[in-house]
Length: 167
Image 1 (cartoon, rainbow, N blue to C red):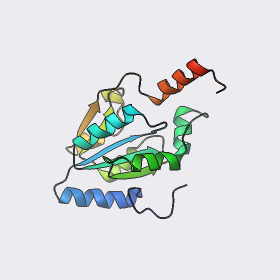
Image 2: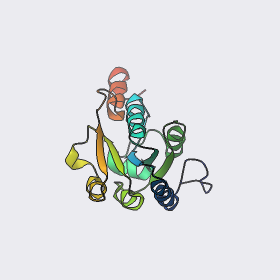
Image 3: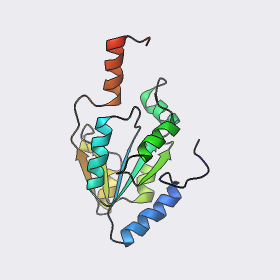
Image 4: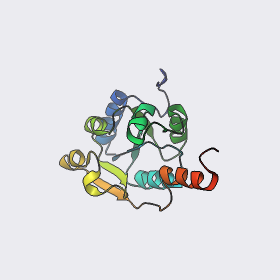
C-alpha cells in the first residue's frame, strides 16, 4: 500500500508523466529502469549508477510486493515494499521512484516515454520489456554488464547453501 503523501522521490505515475515531459522540454534526458530490488546489493547499485550516467533524470520503477510474488514465487519478496522503496529512495543517483503492480513495466514506459531504457545485460536484448516502445519514439536501450554473483536469487541460494533452509 502506497503512502498518501508522495512528497520526496516516491511519485504516482501521473506525476512522473508530467515530470518527465517537463524535463524533456528543458532538454534533459529521462532514463528509466525497473526491478524488484529485493535484498538490495552491489549489482543493483552498479546498474543504478550506470543508468544515472546515461542521462539527467533517473526514474526507478519498483515492483510491488504482489508483483514480486507473481514473478518470483510465494516466498518472495524478502524485503517488504515500503522497505525497498526507502532503500531505493535513499540512493543519491535515483531521482524518482514509482511502484507498480503489473508483472512488467510496459504501461509505465508507455506513459513516461523515457529517452533511455536501462536493464542489466542478464536480460537478452529481445527480452527487455518496453525496448520497442522506447526505440520507436527515438530513444535507446542500454544493457549494463552483469556483475557475476550479485543477483538476489544467487545471494539467497548462497545463504541457504551455507546455512541451510532453517536459518
